[in-house]
Length: 89
Image (cartoon, rainbow, N blue to C red; front, side, top):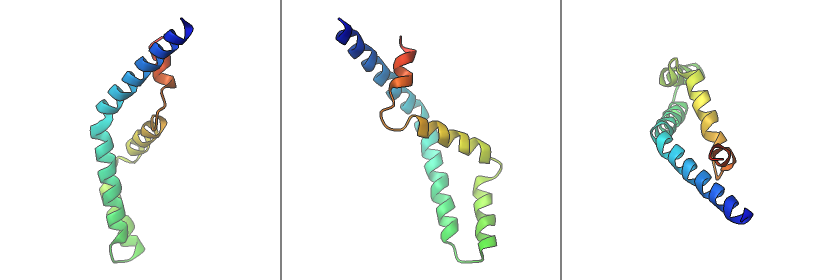
């Protein structure tokens, strides 16, 4: 009985994680695009000051939001079911 209950909690946690990832996919794609743009600007010829200015143009005034979104993504990377499994109890 206990094992069956734990399996059900684990399954529901997994479903919740998949649903969360699906809901975040668009933002994850945006973050990857920002990372790509930042690295591209870093590879540009020019002075370090010009490279940093170009990178700042990519980020704009979104620095705090980008950092927060990256932290949320990292928190749920891999198979981190625990938080979702607790939510279904």
